[in-house]
Amino acid sequence: MIERVVAPNPGPMTLGGTNTYLVGVGDGSGELAAIDPGPDDPRHLSAILETSRRLGRISTVLVTHRHLDHLPAALPLCRETGATLVGHADLPGVQRVVRDGETVFGALVALETPGHTRESLCFWDASDGSLFTGDLVAGSGTVVVDDQPGALADYVGSLERLMGLGPRTIYPGHGPIAHDAVGKLTEYLQHRRARLQQVVDALALRGPLTIEELVEAIYTDVPVSLHPMAARNVRANLEKLASDGQVAALSGQRWQLKA
Image (tube, rainbow, N blue to C red):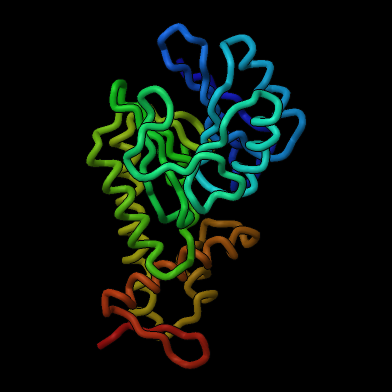
């Protein structure tokens, strides 16, 4: 049993709002896990509690990563239900630290999948092919990659790892459920490779460019208000290309292709 409760925080980055999932064990116990309780909003907390009372009792709270649209309601939900907050060691307030490959609730297994953030987790149920991805994958559009060194390589590696599982259904942190999980992961991998090539092509065509100039050249269909987020992705692409020996940083915050 999987029930979705959507937080009332729609926006350009959150799409229709944060998806909170209530997952049952399936053994008749009525125990539930709440995945990504979402923002600190009393309306959403009330909606989660109301839904859970109809289905059973929340005993475990799982969080994919620390961002403010996923984590803040976790401790309030734990206080209301007596549940245990389970997550990565770097997650603030975590009560039970999990490691990669550890079973966390029922058949759900935690997978370390860095890239969106360094502490990002996905939760995987091999019994039915369900994959809860947090912000590693969205139901529509793409996600922002962390701009820390190595983040894009980590992100692509995480996508490839998930692809290798052969999941059936992706339950994302935002947007609609993806019933063709492999197709969605294929789309994401192709997108990342295409973005890398766009950076290379822009530098080849126009010479040394700043990150801001690359954003303007590549993200022509993205509103200016989202350019700061696009700049993070460009920075991650440049860091990956630099580590591969394809580009180099110049003075004046410009980047160029290596000969």
